[in-house]
Image (tube, rainbow over all chains, first blue to last red; front, side, top):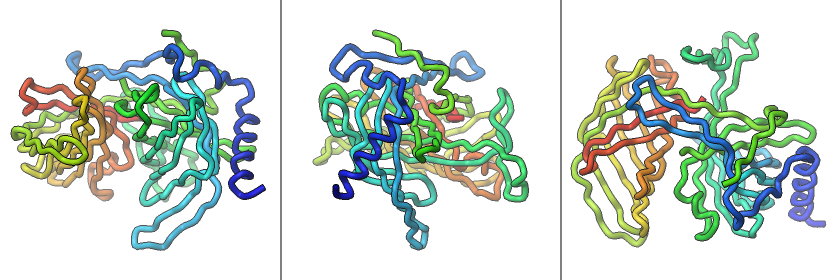
Length: 200
Length: 151
């Protein structure tokens, strides 16, 4: 078993282990569209246009090598071993060893999805991370956590904004939709679940 | 269209995103200049001026500090790529970048990335992801952008 076969198998096995009950196969890209409910947001002025978020899909991603390059602006490398994509609007897998987070200042990944119909979808994902003293409360601005106050656990906000390049066909909607994502790191085994919302 | 419920028990796995309205920008542009390129039509529009109004940020567009550098697809969808500079009411400088899509069906959405002075009054803008929607005048020279924090 070479390295690629190994990490591909490991990633798939891991994803199956942590997501046993989730209906990952519900609906294929070529079937009738399946969507999650939409949450709408607006501003204080009723003329502010509404904006909606709707869960599109999630990706369970296993990262592997972690390297830092001491360039003038330090560049990180965290390779993508593989993973699984599940949810209402896209199913498939993360193409094993198809790219990495090439961190510089912030999260900046380039890798490939392989949809259940074999379509190859390129993801370029930029992310931001910041720690605050407490989670958001309605009507109150977040207060960044200072290094002088490490005692409180605080609240980490990670947001990623992917740009997809999908082939012409059933996944074409991804080429003209804005997305925003959250992620949660999971243990046993170590992996990250990215949850992608369509901006409507 | 079938609805796909999010299982309650997956909150530890699936991260949430909520939007909080932050501010709006009324921007005035010069007329667009379109050129034909191997990648499709390229649409440049200089940002002449603008005003940002919001509870936590009031600023002006630094005149001619950038604009829209969009690529126009065959179906008229625009890949939005905008860069410009704001000068806040306290004199601090702020960089704004938009990445998104403007579609012929009226969908105009983008992500805004903002850089501010970490030692200044607007440090809260750093490492904040904004989701943006826009409304345009018919000649597309007057645009209002609405910025929501992805919290």
